[in-house]
Amino acid sequence: MSYGLIFILAIIIYFNRYFFLEPKVAIRLPKFIEKMLSFSAPCLLSVICVPIIFFDGETGLREISTNAYLYAAIFGCLLMFKVKNVLWNMVGSVTFFYLLLFLIIPNI
Image 1: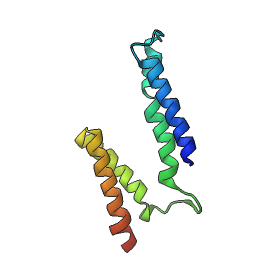
Image 2: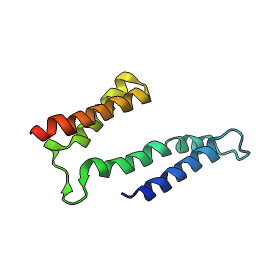
Image 3: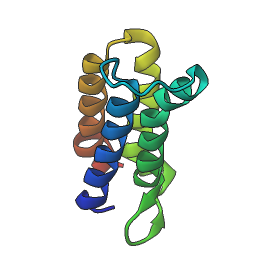
Image 4: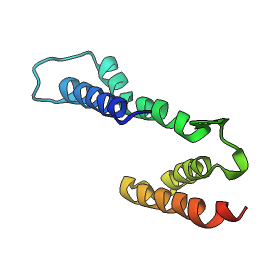
């Protein structure tokens, strides 16, 4: 996935969240649409992350036994339920990913 596509998706998400959910904007949407828009960022983030976790650019599917992306994603989800802080979850997940990538998986 190219950085340009990621940047365009980020702009779309920001526009949706700012324009429709900002209290200063005069447009009022029904409550159920506001609730649906609040889920736009997690949904699009999932759509971006799943191909990165499961697919390799050249060979197709990643092998599960050496997939540091999958194990770090699972660790991040488990950590999310325990920590409930986005910053510490990111730090913990990225640290776990690099530990797997550089220390554990190359030795398998």
